[in-house]
Image 1 (cartoon, each protein chain N blue to C red):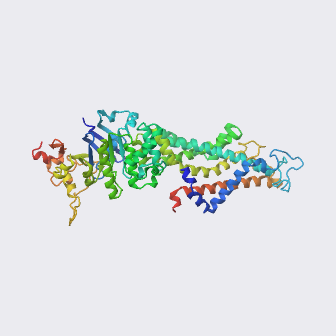
Image 2 (cartoon, each protein chain N blue to C red; image 1 turned 120 degrees about the vertical axis):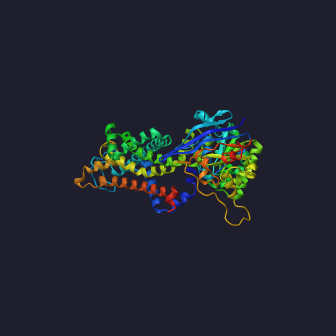
Length: 323
Length: 284
């Protein structure tokens, strides 16, 4: 059984200008211990997906339909207190710009000890030692001394490690990492990525890594879901995705990565992300797609499986006879 | 936050700022009078010296005597105790009640927020002294009345300020992060939001201290607050004014000067503090 199964998830934002259908029927599944990357441009709905799973979508956003089945229970049907009890204990989340994600008035030690006491259910007299252990597990030097640090005294990388330590304190089964390395140095990025992977290998925590950086995702993810305009347009094991991308958008993304020693212009994807208030009819990518034909403009493509663990939502595949 | 204030930097910067230092001096002086009133005042503030009625300042009565032969200097000193007590209590009550209600309103939002803010609008639609007079009139004179009236008229200001800072704090990522580790709503409000939104409210409270003294003295001056024979600055000005045409200037001038000085002192401290604690203003 899948650890998490998202079925037909719809999250709309009710703005003054109209309804923005950020997610309009999203589907994907996650196996225990698996790391899946949600990759897409800004505004493709990848962060909203993360927040929707934890039911932390802020107004004017609202989850209007679908199911988020976690260990057999539909989270969207849980009463709020039960949902709150599940956050941080079964599903945890870390954020971009980690320094703003820590309460500026609470020391690292107090923060961790509270999470350990309330979430992991540790008695008060054991939280301090466990906090030190957690900090050293995320490779923070001199953890004893760090307990009394305030967030403004931490570097970005350090703050993210603290966030990770807090997130895994209660040994959650799923960790949602929303652009965890945005705003960090490249070297620190690599360290954080290694840490996330290490965590999975040691504790078996499944992870959803939300990022706009395909290269970064390829370093740690077992599988990658490419998102475009609120839909997953291709889902495949990382290696397969890089070797045989099926969706024109994925191909465009892969082609637009700069390569070492490359001269001349980097090929981009022409056009811009569609306005989700009035998404294009049919395939949402068709206005930018070099291969678009009549059917793409009227009919919404459905996932076409090229192998049991690889699908893409594109009519081209049907034409090729995969359906 | 309080710990950080106590630590060095803020204290150092106060010392660099002569007007704040002056204000601090005045405030400390007034509190000193209030605390040590029994030792500073040469006479009982209510004692009537019948052979020294309405005398101008002299070596025996430094600030003269009023129409009952009471020593004005002793009364001014004792009044510092009463007025500071009233102001402190009123500020504390409006601070706690106002910011709690404002925080709740901003946090809950929706119809509660709407109703509560409209109620605050109604309260603020009256000039505050008129409203205070109305409340004081309904309750009848007394120290308790002054405290209730003064704190009631200041509650909307604190509520509004707390609500607006809380609304902006609410948007910050750490609140989301706190929810993501499973904090229940009341913990988010009391552990995360209120402490982070408190600084401007506290600064406002120091600024309000002077106003509270003015309001309290004003009510008593009008005869709606502390009753007549008591030693209170507003009451003393009122009594002194009755002898205005006889030219007994000392009877109303000295309490007036003390009110002005105290209000000035608190305002200087409040201004200095808001410069120190508000990073946006400090950078200018």
